[in-house]
Length: 113
Length: 114
Image 1 (cartoon, chains in turn purple, orange):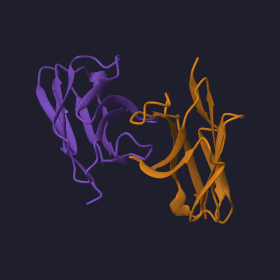
Image 2 (image 1 turned 45 degrees about the vertical axis):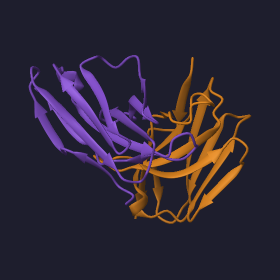
Image 3 (image 1 turned 90 degrees about the vertical axis):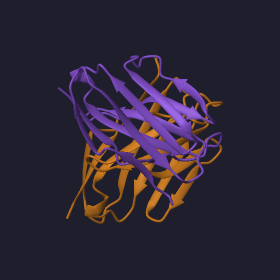
């Protein structure tokens, strides 16, 4: 299985809602990532879990909260988002601790009203 | 300041010709550089990785070069086809000890005209 899956595909939420994005891979990869991508811009790294250790992009606001229940699963908890957080949220995985490419999921299109 | 630049925002070429895309970087010393393809509304797809001690890498119709003196990578698609139309992103590791993290360039949108 060489696929990264993400759910849901689309999400519309209000600024007071709490929601979660989910990501799963079964390639035995030990690094998993969350990226945010705005239209016509490159993906911007938000969080990395590598061998269950979290690295954070310091510019990501605290209304985004990652969780890695195990090496195959990655969640992104959303709370009190702003309209400017509307974007494509991409999950990716890689072997970790080696220079290899990243496998991306199809993304979740998030709209914050 | 550190930055990654890709030659142009959009590139149009005729079918059958070779497309050449450029990735230049400033104030980085990457151990490797990657190239991805991204179609609209979808996640990037990994294409090739080239290490700092490698001059050239090939995969089918794709060729990547890496010149650490010029701080530049070139990405070539030979015998281009309309199906090659997509945005192509280069990415590099910002610190040589950080295997897990890459930073993406802005991308080049390639259109192959039949």
